View 1 (spheres, helix red, strand yellow):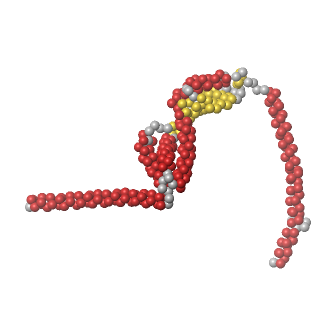
View 2 (view 1 turned 120 degrees about the vertical axis):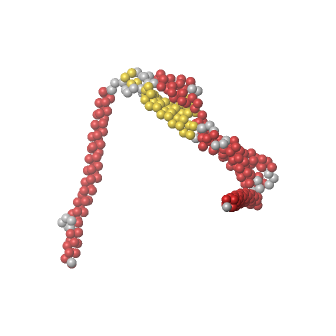
View 3 (view 1 turned 180 degrees about the vertical axis):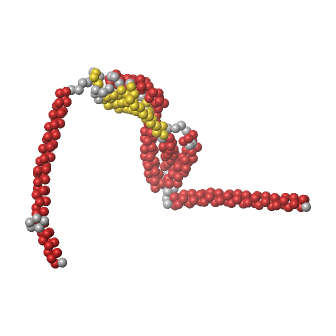
Length: 313
């Protein structure tokens, strides 16, 4: 009895194992068939599309554009990789407000500080008791430059901001490489073109591609400039009521003149408002009074109409 039970159990195990192996082989065969169909459909679609381009007369440029873009994408994916595996491209901006004792000396100190970090002043603005500078500093020295600004004066406020443009930078770089490959392809096709129609078509594509390359290179230069050189806005401020000559006392005569000027302006404005009321308000009040007299006063047209209607009822 025991041997019979073991034999049945062994037989069931063999049947179960056979079912599993058959199902796996069937699933693998189906997956391979689906993959083959997808590849076949893509190949046939590409061949049909290229054939339609050639049938329409575009023997070079249209088919070549797709090939060049595909080649550039393959090359770009192999060369650049993901953003996470590359150097981050950051645009750094800082702002510092400093209170200084002498404006002229502080301005000279800012210029010296800028040169020490191999930077340059892109713009500046000066007033009697304040000055501001927009400074471009190499990004590698940005943090150190910000830390040493406290040596120029008393920091009133300080701010930092960082913008990650890695995705934008590498996307633009890849698209630029794509267009350069396309340009080289177009030039090679143009050199070997024999038909005038193909030559004109290739020249149009080449001119468009060269324009795109020029625009992308300009964008790349601007973006690279913002990445390589960080911006620091430096504001210098003297203490309240202070100039380089010292403390500035309030000017009493100027205050009296300003008070009298404001007083005269007030009365002139008041008289002007009264004139507007007299010239514009009186006629309006007269017109309103006339209509009231006509409709509800002694004439009372509306009163008579209502009286007649009430009598009929």
